[in-house]
Image: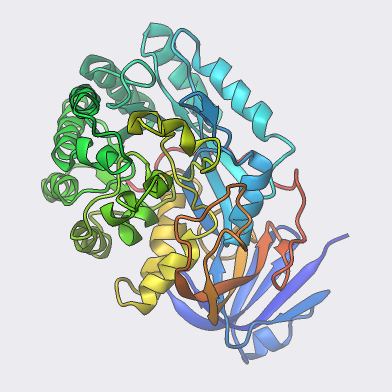
Amino acid sequence: MSSRTLIRGGLVITASDEIHADVLVEDTRIAALAATGTPAAEAWTADRTIDATGKYVIPGGVDVHTHMELPFGGTFASDTFETGTRAAAWGGTTTIVDFAVQSVGHGLREGLDAWHAKAEGNCAIDYGFHMIVSDVNEETLKEMDLLIEEGVTSFKQFMAYPGVFYSDDGQILRAMQRSAENGGLIMMHAENGIAIDVLVEQALARGETDPRHHGEVRKALLEAEATHRAIRLAQVAGAPLYVVHVSAMEAVAELTRARDDGLNVFGETCPQYLFLSTDNLAEPGFEGAKYVCSTPLRPREHQARLWRGLRTNDLQVVSTDHCPFCFTGQKELGRGDFSKIPNGLPGVENRMDLLHQAVLDGHISRRRWIEIACATPARMFGMYPKKGTIAPGADADLVIYDPHAEQVISADTHHMNVDYSAYEGTRVTGRVETVFSRGVPVITERAYTGRSGHGVYTPRSTCQYLS
């Protein structure tokens, strides 16, 4: 039995257009759009009709940087694929791309299979995987080709975390050379981890153990240096490069220069760098531990440069790097030693609302909001136009968004499995009302109507964003 849903009278916003239109959904896909009140739209009939007058109708958010159940620092990220994808849906995100991890001494396949096992049957929304490459060797390079055939088309490397995820310049170059051949996209955590470890050791020796020192040792210049080095290695390899969680104005400058030179270099930032700062890391007592993530929060003056980068398209994507650890029992592992605080913040539920607030604050336009949160992430990672837009044939991943509703972000009301909010007490205007994932309502007028296992694995093509 086919089912039809009709969403009438909303302002449909995509990366390219804003139009008062009716949207017809048949089963899992968008069947048609027509301007509200036109004969074509008036003729449509459906099993279910939703009045979206005064609301926005936007594509479901695409968050291409999450870490559900990630092992880190002797513990695990507190959101499972079940709790994390449910929270994502509450926040208007209908697709995540999470990171499967290759452990040193093991193959890519083994890591990918482990992540499939964690996610399968548990997700409320659709999901894909990137592959963290921790051990570059001949076997790994061959496996990269095989994974691309299965729709895992992006590979993350780390210039940080020696002894855990770290790759040296030679390993990075080899992976980039392979991706230049097979069409994969290398994602880079760009921080000079070798130098940072020296500064960590020196700070602890001086008795500087508080959370704020996490930000002070992970210097902006070492993010910029690593970003520059990654760009040059990619240039040598003839490969595109995507730099994750850009936080520092100096790193943005490196990306801007490379893009001005015509290189296929892309940058992502996250809400925490746009809305939080070292002021949070310096909160009294041990409260600053809540804000420990890497790259770290920067002084407030970096925010203007990040917003400018988003406006000028020197930064293309806003993802969350959602990697939550509870304050009690997890962040507390670093009491007396900031280097032992698990790195990561919760945010998968807050991204769409915070970026809508940025529209109201004049940082970005409404269409740019959709571009950086939905369309470009889908294009960058090979899911467009199935995901990231509202067009005939696209998956019916739709959000009815109330741009006038006011809310206060709080751990008391969020749905992420973590005991604090990084944005506690922040007032925002705009709120998700109803969410469809492939035509199925997962949030219905602010009530959860989804289920674990509705979300399916989404294979991806190679990057669709190359110039």
